[in-house]
Length: 241
Image (cartoon, rainbow, N blue to C red; front, side, top):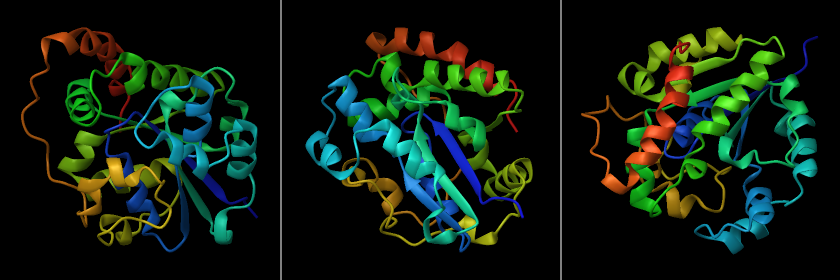
């Protein structure tokens, strides 16, 4: 018998990652976890994020303990375990070898859209905040193990959600479920404690938002961040589903 499948979804912030967690979380056969390394990341970096104290109190700060929880039995003994991860959380000192034993998927979004969305919630994002460099490094790590990383562009998903979800499920070796196309309003029981600050729009949703509009204008002071992030995005976009 095959072991339960663990799916690690790697993205930066403001990248449809919560909607994707809700999509998988609406499958009867799938458990989900929301950014399990967040408290460890804040503790190890000392960064002052919104709701920092609440986040530190809500999760273990020991990344080794996080890995043990991720690689143990799937919650509720469900066949699939979807793990929503932020690439910027994978700093030095956070183990990576466990990634050999999960199905790694990389969720990407054009950095102009990420920067515009992030800046509306937290001022002056840096390249380190938005995770593009770290995402490309994790992609290279997985590829170097001989695995073929799966890449999904969130803009493509919004434009054709069922088509792209079917393609994703096929790529990772699971059956598509129509339940992935929608979810109940109001969030998911597995939401992190930070959800009240970041997840307002998706809490009010029941399915994926429609196709994205024109590319946003980026403030002049954030243009260098866009210029730095773009090559990382383009590298992964070249092999997307």
